[in-house]
Image 1: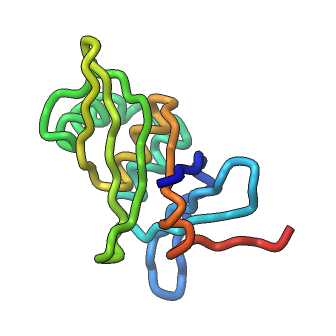
Image 2: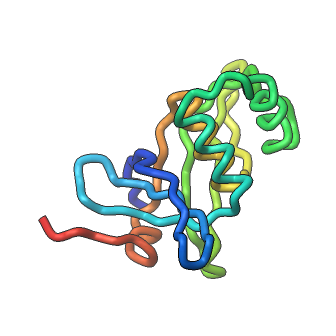
Amino acid sequence: MALKECTIDSVTCNLRNREWIILLREKDREQYLPICIGQNQANIVKRELVHDYKYYYESKYYERFLAGTDIFMSTLESVIVGMPQDLLFRAKLLLKESGNSFEIDCPVAGALALAFRRKAKILVDETTFQKAGISLPE
């Protein structure tokens, strides 16, 4: 499975159906991956993107909620976004603590917010881009 590094391009709302979308962009290419999310998840990601620090303590507790354990002291190495057969996006946090590596499944919007906050790599597997990605002509 080849992994492509991405960045968060935008968080936007489709005004026709009120659906929120996180748009990931592959680094160095005009290839995008739209991920539909709920309004609450969109708000979490938007807060991180604009550095709204009045929600700092809420964010710390959200990290615990995401993983089901305290990951605040762990190093987040990367987030991997994928889409298995059920066509729902999934995310895995790749963490390191005290020399041990482990991974935790996580809601995709929360994982992306966490990756942005901690400056971790966002990786998307190539088959996900093939199934749901959008390429613009170069």
